[in-house]
Image (cartoon, rainbow, N blue to C red; front, top):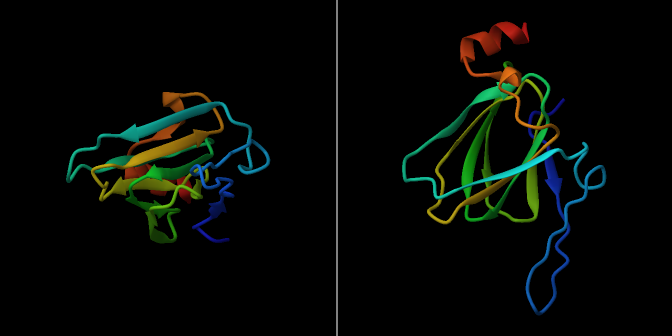
Length: 132
């Protein structure tokens, strides 16, 4: 099973400009319950540093770029997010960290459920123990 799972989104724009549509269960493999975006991240700041027990997410840089590190406990990979038409799937129990945000980065995240602090694993050693 591959750690990196890209989701290619179709660009539907024309000479007036770009357009990308995202539909639940069509473009993303889950029902959509929450949408949020990260922007204005200061230089040198890193974010994330957690996994989710059950939540599934898709992240896409709608503007700018950032690097996301994914870690399933067996494999780690860095992914450069720099396209408004290419998302990355973040499955349950995948540790993720984001860094190298461009000054104009807007990172859009689509989530399979509403915010629930109990779903977070924020300690990396605990994450590794839970993966065994």
